[in-house]
Length: 128
Image 1 (cartoon, rainbow, N blue to C red):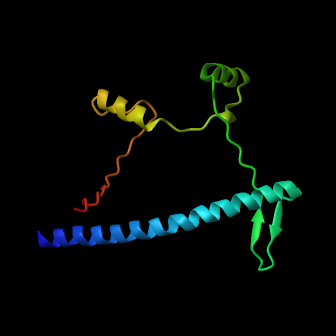
Image 2 (cartoon, rainbow, N blue to C red; image 1 turned 135 degrees about the vertical axis):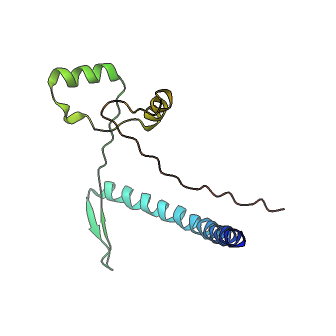
């Protein structure tokens, strides 16, 4: 069992090292995010959508779109009436499927398959 114990200890040491480095990097990320926000604001003020630094670094203003359904019944009625199913995505709520499977002797809803992937969660020992 010492090989297993050695693996756990090696994992713990590496996880602690990475956590410490991530804490150090977090401060740099905050500064980077402030600079990024300032660049974005400047681009909007100037009215440009892309730019290059003198060193050749490129920046592009990207417009991300996010849509949310706030009335599911109205939306689904409209989709079915219009016949335009391009507004729908083919995915399922994992928690609902898991609950259904648990309640139906391991059977998935029709047309659905479920996979389970095992992983470990490591918790650092408390320092005394």
